[in-house]
Image (cartoon, rainbow over the protein chains, first blue to last red):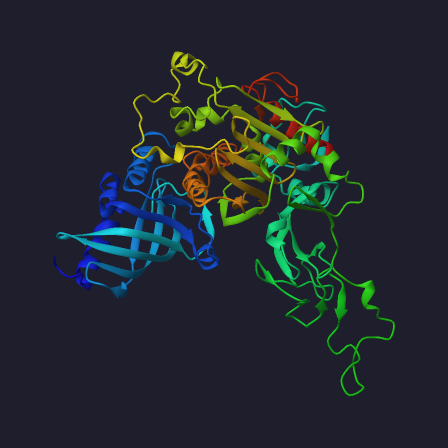
Length: 156
Length: 419
């Protein structure tokens, strides 16, 4: 199995944000392992050890369901994100799995053109090598602010 | 009656009218006028109401404190070393600066950063820096008495672990204020010690009343929120109901699992609430436990002017509704569980929290719909909303196809506001 390198980590991070920002959400769950944990939380909750997330999914199936709900059930104004990532820091690299932290900036663009900073924070990731792919086993999206404007339809 | 203020923008010349006793029409200026916003602070938040402040569990030990708001008024809530909870305006008696700057923590006392005036956990002014001057010069006048100065102190009421505050001596005791049925329904959920599992704030682009009405509005739930209806979690045809307290300001709506109910109503009307063949890949978040042993799987409860207690299956949360100007509202979410939850129950609640909140499968729309109204009525200050579903009354009904609790809100609101 190929080693987990900074190049590979950056490639998967780039592909992930490209998937969301280009509204290819149906492909979004495929970035995750079947037994993944995906959680959107705040820095304050993370610091305090509060477990609840704004989004909490402990299986890939739950991610697929979220996309289906966004497409079929939920009502929200047309909007898109532009993710800008900082450089990932590799915190631990055990060969088969690696821990890394990547800062993000997400700008939300509404259908009428209103453009705002929607969220900033860090992705705290555990990545697992799976053949030639890297999959997120754990992705904690830790937002710097505890405030969310209006709603969070599209995942971060 | 006529109110002697004017609507904003292009309608400036028109008086703001609202026929006495009329609860089926809501004039849109009520969501817009800056004068109304100022009056609400005096007549509601600082008037004879119980404002939700925090959970008792958040100020558990002596020295624990939280900062919050009563409307726009900043407030400190603290547990003193006599084990009692106190609350006072977060405003230094000297120049008016905030006494506590962060959201909460532990303190033995509070010192204003501006000139170091010091307060105990009850909000009493205990020390004034350089009170006797320096080297015999300066200092406060001889007649200055510390006990004559201090931030405004709140009366406190604690009910089922909820801490309420009031500036009014005329507010009824909390049980009476809530009404018997609402009090019982609060105790039904908050029946044992709770633990906080998360806090976050959802900023809503609308007047606070549009959100409070939305929570009370049982009519919209199964129409706007298609996730629930698709999975048969909340349908008007399910067995359920609603109660409104005598003041009109407090309500609870609830529903029971009822597999016998007919599914034809929605399909017959061709409503959006019916999406066929929608199946979850991982339905584990819909596996709920009947933890209150009464078959009631959903209860949404409000207490005027700013508390929502949520039970959606096993997702429990407190929502505090705070105005932030005429056109913005802070919705402070505190998700909770019970201290004796098993690990399985903790996980189940974490999953079910997906149902509510800013990214909630159900409440996502509630974050935006108030803004749709606020934008829609931009120049309609002189026009009125129609709230006639279920008649003109405000009393409990055996159905949720009614706007009785919305009318109840306006009955209570108008009584406080004197309009």
